[in-house]
Image 1 (tube, rainbow, N blue to C red):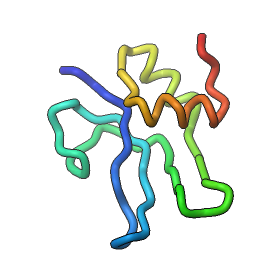
Image 2: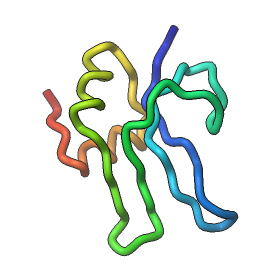
Image 3: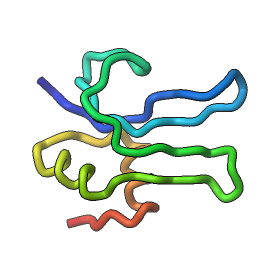
Image 4: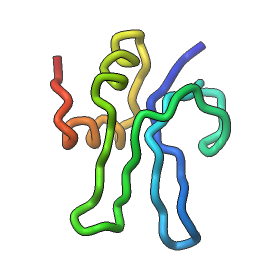
Length: 82
């Protein structure tokens, strides 16, 4: 089972907010997920990024692959590259 860390869309029409989730790569974008590890609100000023870095590091250590967007959000949130 390939596990990815990716964004799950939430919010209203034209007002997106996102949950950062760990999910099976075969699951739909807004479908089933294993664990929610944070959220991202691009519409607030400045954009809000709240990610549990300990949980993210644990999943990365287990082999979970972050999406390109989540990789950037983790860097902004302060996750180390090691």
